[in-house]
Image 1 (cartoon, rainbow, N blue to C red):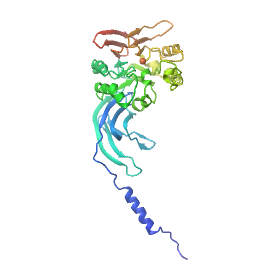
Image 2: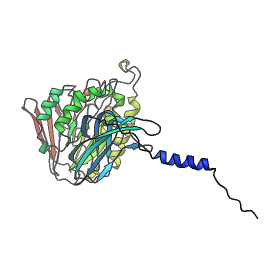
Image 3: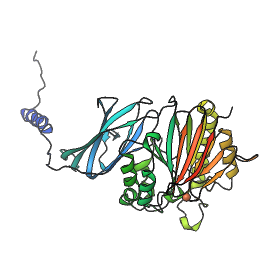
Image 4: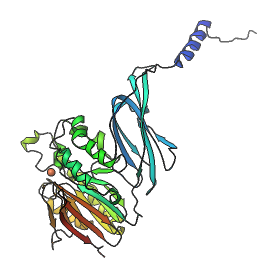
Length: 386
Ligand SMILES: [Fe+2]
């Protein structure tokens, strides 16, 4: 009986060997280094994460090296199995521990040419190490600084942030309308995020509420890729010290069908979804009951255009047990006191050239507002409602 064996032709074996060796041939690395053009800026802090934004002059893939102490962890943003490649880098660090100081270093590696095989690479640029601290609901004292409606005026941003005692501000909140309209990436950075980054020094995180002017302009549809929190929406909740913070996106100030929008808006659906989220949050979040203070941050004091249902939002804020709502939008200071049958909370509207400092212990929430010229505007202390 003849034993049959199956053999690949010799030529095929040679081809496979050559392919294997060739696939591992080194890819080309050019002697060209990318430049970090903006950032890093820390955004959307939480108890377990933070977003880090920076840009490079040429397409890169990026990573963040980080750790509590040593830089012993790293995160490389990827999507659908592939590292992200581009000039804008928004990295959401997650899984962090509350109240910890983390060190971090950002790194971007240039991708000179994206090809099917052997993409051509460049060199690496790094920046850091820097550090930041995660939020922490168990912190006995917590504080933040609030500015608003800076409207593209970098000198205003510099002046107001220059007044902040950063030892008394765990993060900065911008109350919205940092712009008239947002037209490009350069515009986004030059008129707001660069001056903010200079003040925040890669260390203090920023929460930026969306104002009605941030829904206008050629670039606003790109904005989530730069500033959106990991939740992927502009409304969310955070906990820090005795404060439970609810961030509301008050959208536009006129109906969708107003001709200035040219039929390109659908805020009615968006705001209904947001209301449902807010309502559900009020019903289900433990901290609505357990946090000593509830603070709502919303750009428009009237909650924006909500189909003439503004009273529903006031009612929901009441149900949330809000102690304080902070807004901007009007460019003029106002302190609306709680009123029977209406808002049960204090409503602070911060003016365009003012800085509000908010700090809380479990027994007191203190607000100080000062004007750009240093003059005191308002000061009050709230105690927890029992
Ligand atoms: Fe506004």
